[in-house]
Image (cartoon, rainbow, N blue to C red):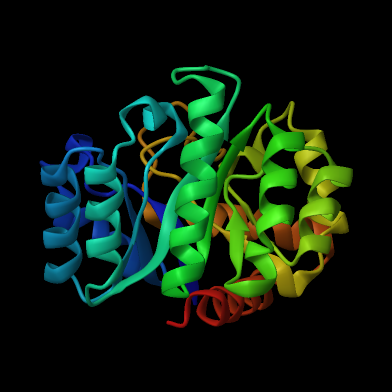
Length: 257
């Protein structure tokens, strides 16, 4: 069995066949999926939550992507806080820092990240972290807050170096790998898989993005998380079923599923 620990099945690209997509995931052995709701508009959280309520296999995380940190206001903070109290909402995320695109001011990103970490600690919710080209600040903010030892959390869609993965693991974080692990030029990610203890690994699709080989270039979907498990199994010399069971247990432990 598998869990897709990070998916965006609320996106419009799934509107025409969402039920079929979710059924394909179940048929592939993906027993649960964590829907990431991002806002910042309240109706986006509401839309995601309605989908989660309608599908027993879905759980939800509510957060604010660093791309939207410029839109972070007390009202947005309160919306996220409200959704954290709802049934089936098991985490705060994704939150973090993205210095690759810089869609939002870096200082505002750091303020938003630190503030939402405080909310996670207050509400005793694990966090899902997005970090891109921002390792030092992400690591420092998380370390200063002690978030991974207090509530737990995951660095989602890890694309950094083995040393960076180890540094996050040393703080108490889980590391989630996506279809990137199957990409020809992503040897650094495969090397990171080797240094992350098996009891700290999660798998995800980040769908509809980052479809793994052999689906690269197409819309990604939760059923494809099996390809991520297969790649990790090959790296560790394990059976795919073992990686599926291990990462499922890890995900359940982290998120209290």
